[in-house]
Structure formats: structure tokens, C-alpha cells
Amino acid sequence: MEIVNNRITGKISGDVLKTNGKAIILRKLLEEGKFSRKDCLIIADDRNNLPMFLPGIKTIGYYPDPILAMNPDMW
Image (cartoon, rainbow, N blue to C red; front, side, top):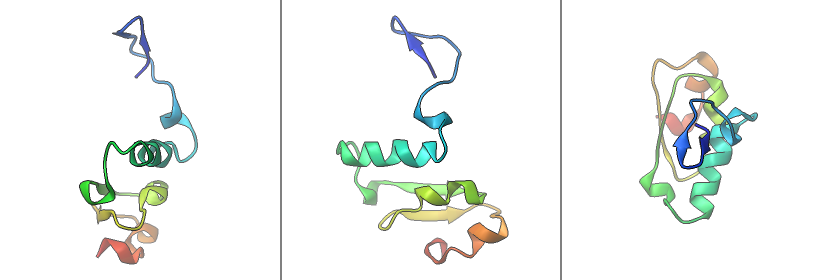
């Protein structure tokens, strides 16, 4: 969500809108030390979320599409 003058505007902006945006944000949080990989759990249903499946992070496929279901880290 976009924040202007400490208020949420209702608009969506930032890294999340970029290709692999969720993965970009996750990597930034990990690099900043806000979370460790053992603190994270990725729950996904489609292949667009595969970039977030980083080594050391638990992953769960929730009714996953076939490509996501083939990821060995899910099981």
C-alpha cells in the first residue's frame, strides 16, 4: 500500500508490483535481518510464487498447480 504523509492512500505501489515482487521483498527482509529463513513459511498455489522458494525456507503448496507441485522442497 502506498503511504503519503503517514497515511495509507489506498493505492498499491512499490516492489510488489514488479516481476517477482514478493521474492524481492522477501530477500530485502532477509538481508536487513528482520527475519531469518527459519522464521519464514511460504504458502503458495501457483508457479508465480516459485522465486520465493529459497533454500532453508519451509514451503507449502495449497492446491498447487502442476509446476509448483513438482518442486521437491514442498514435500
